[in-house]
Image (cartoon, rainbow, N blue to C red; front, top):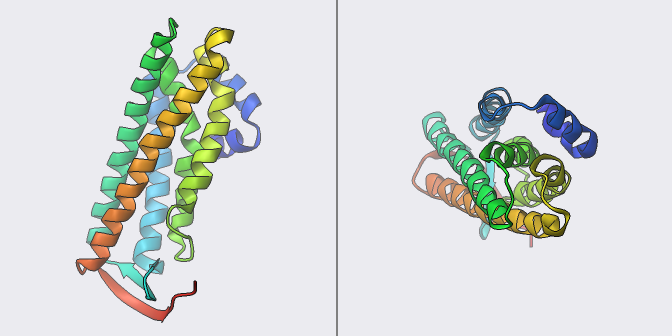
Amino acid sequence: MIKALLFIFDSAATWERVVEAKRSFFTIFVIYVIPLLVLTTAVETYGLVHIGRRTGGEVEKTVRILPEPAMRYEAVQLGLSLVALFMGAQIIHMIGKSFHGRQTFTQAFTVVAYALGPLFTLRVLNAFPQMPPGLTWVVGIALTISVMYQGIPRVMLPDLTHSLGLFLLSALTLILITGLSCFLKYYLLKQLIHSGGATVLTFFPAVC
C-alpha cells in the first residue's frame, strides 16, 4: 500500500525505481499485488460486517452484511480484481504488439499492476457507510490513468510516434474492464442485501 501511495504522490521517481529493480512478473504479483489486495479486502470486509453500508432508495438504510455472505462477496471481488489485472495486462500487451513493439507480457503486467495500485488502495474507503457507491472507482481510475501515463514510456519503451496511441488505448482498456468489474461488484452487493444477507441498523429519509 505504501508503494501505491508513492505512485500517487511521486509517480515519476517511483517508476524510475521500478525500472531499476527489474522485477519479474512473479515477484511483482507475490510481493505487491497479493498483499495489497488481501489488505484492502480485509479492511473492506471489516467495514461491511462491523460498520455497515448505506443503501439508496426512497428510504435509505444502513445495513451490516453478515460475516459469511460478506466473505463470499469479497472473494468474488478479489477474483474480479485478478481478472481485471491479468486481462488488462494481456490486452495491453497485444496493443503494444499491434504498434510493432517488442514489449513482453512482463512489461505490460508491470505497468498494469502498479498503475492499478491506487484504485485497489482506495477501496479501503468503502469500509465507511457514507462513501457513495462508485466514487472510489471514479477517483481510483483517474489516479490509475495518471500513474500509467508516467509508466508506459518508462517500462514498455514504445516508439515516440506510438507512445500516445498506446497510452490512450491502454487507458480505455482499464476504464472498461475495471468499470465493468465495479458495476458487477455493486450489483452483487445489492442482491446480497436484498436476499437477506444483511441486518438493518438504521432507517433515515433519503436526501436528494
